Length: 420
Image (cartoon, rainbow, N blue to C red; front, side, top):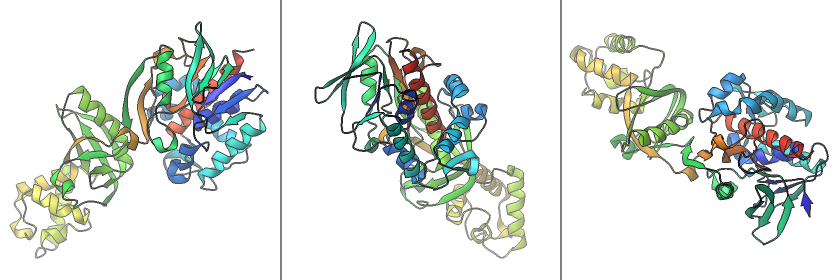
């Protein structure tokens, strides 16, 4: 049997590509190797599915630091505003939460997945699950179809690869599409984990004395060997038994990975600012005044409520201050060192967890070889790429799903328009 378009991968990009390709009655086949469509989408946003982000386009692109500018063309036709309207038309109301994140009113990812699956069924898309693809077939510079692992071949002159990256492999993203792209002549830029926890051998990490401690509204910076800040993110973070996690640690992870490689280092310095709205001199004066107001109280007790209690022994130790000191005996130089540590607590990180533990894959099909307006390969007619297989990666917060929906819609639209 021959199809107008074959879509490989039933995730965010593949489902949206299937919707777009089948809008005008074209014969579309969606193939997925798993038993269920939308598996990664179904666990996104903590199971609530952060479908997009409501920021303006320029801000959206800033939050996709991995080649976000490539998406200007796709966002001009199908951006976050169109995504919101698309789900509204399907009867899925969305609500805006902090930092522009958009969730279904139901707070259930299943609502979003079911709506997409039902829509492609209504539009006549043929669906084949449990059908792993072995290879994409090419003939004389043109896509000819696909061959399944079973040996079955299915003909089509348009194939959309939406098979994902290598992160969260339990959802089916195991990097299958990279080999198909390479067979067509494509370059795969180096893959690396992004939006992934950081690992550290610092003594207070290894001792687990801060394990489970959450910090609210702090900032985390990554520094290069010349002590120049590479990136800073503000928000929440978490100490774990292996290092640092939570939103701002995940956002800094790609910069840690790149710095380790660029400077050929064994570790990279990051630092935590516990009081990002205050200057060092303000922290020094305020904290000293707290001690002066209760001169008989040990400084370890004075600082409770000013900074997280579990961090006090570590900071005092680094500043060479005995925790039993009282106000009259405080050495001012050491107290200044304590204030500096509250503003810039140094932590050496040696890397991140693996790409399989990451939320997002960095690297992928080289964008130099993809038409940004259509998502079609510049090297093979009828071959399209969308979603995480591309060398595009953003922060968590609805940005990656926005990129997937947008590139998927664009690929689906142009895969059929090229047939007409």
